Length: 247
Ligand SMILES: Nc1ncnc2c1ncn2[C@@H]1O[C@H](COP(=O)(O)OP(=O)(O)OP(=O)(O)O)[C@@H](O)[C@H]1O
Ligand SMILES: [Mg+2]
Image 1: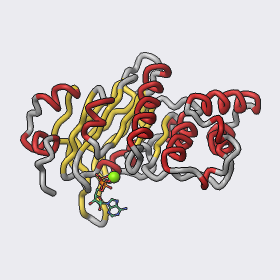
Image 2: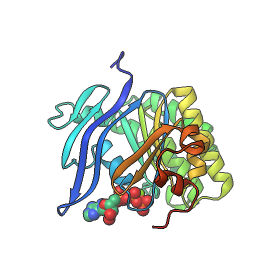
Image 3: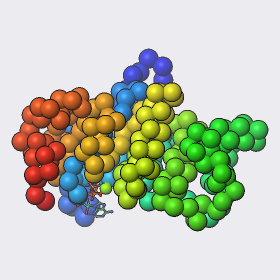
Image 4: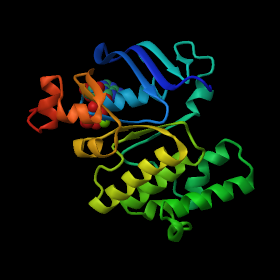
């Protein structure tokens, strides 16, 4: 894997549901160690893209490479490659178990030794400000606490690619800030590549290095965050970030 600087590459990726195409992307490459923000109107295909990237669903057509290795089609290594990444949903699916056990889940599933699991879980709870909640049942947490547990669980096994689908929707500003700081820290300290879908264009502007604008199943524009926000090339991008797009 060393030497290949692209964590994820896709070509001619398409997805149709019942013959209706909802995604069609010519080419995209995601570099190791960067944060990518995906913005775009509802129904643009943002979540679908994350599900295809995570190999949760098979594309209708196209190619997906992860760390330079073929993941789709005929991805002999797909299962192993899938374990390099993790997808966190807007509404985290936490188990009806303690916070600690939720965070430990991925490590147990991957067969880490017990001492290593304990060490990592402890460090993560600390980092996420969840120490006091370690023994609490996850289904009794607030939205912000639950999202922090979901993030801790997602990064426990140090994935090289973290896919986030609106991780701060419905959270209050202080939890939004906390989660954004955690995302930045994961990227800076662990070098994790992050692709975050957000409805909040300001959030993309705050934390992403590059921004992708999705519209009607296509990627209309990709660029450095500053360029997208200061000088969008496509009128649709401009309308969207200015809040003038009606959809
Ligand atoms: N399982 C499915 N079956 C049929 N249609 C689907 C399915 N999943 C998604 N779609 C359709 O694909 C299109 C893209 O959906 P997607 O959820 O990717 O959009 P999105 O950009 O994430 O929107 P939002 O911002 O509202 O979350 C929509 O028209 C949606 O109805
Ligand atoms: Mg979505």
